[in-house]
Length: 232
Image (cartoon, rainbow, N blue to C red; front, side):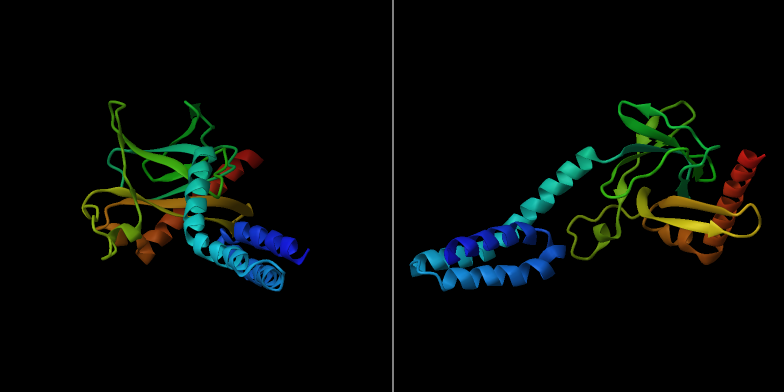
């Protein structure tokens, strides 16, 4: 009975430990399972097999878990194409659930978000959290799309053997948040996601305090004007 209970605890905690955020809960229970196995009447070889194998298998198991969850998560995530004017550079933002915003358009299973020249898109739809399945494009005057590469800071770490060209424009995904405006009226609350279209070389220009303040004020003004239209 002790052996079977111990094995059950070891198996359950091994599965749970594949998610590193659960380790604080799974490790104590795993140790209880190990103790039950060790004090059972099974052979030493069997005891070692059931106590050591899960420890050795955890790292490759965790890597497999991350790969599968990432692959499945991305495949089932909200699919969005973000399209920018061909000469666009700078901060961009999507404000969700705006009744007067751009309507939802889906082509080949992907939502089409067309950004204006100022980079501030008021959108009738919502941007989901969790996994991301986004593609980014420039759109020229002839209707030709050119894909924009995704960028992240880790790509430029010293440890990276193949760093992207720091002069080529890419899309840097920022984050999501919400904001409440009390004044001027009408009182407004909205959710947003922001990103930056820039090369690594020029990226810091779009994190300048004065630039961001102007961008924020313009966004707030457009959101409030939109709400005024709905109220009126």
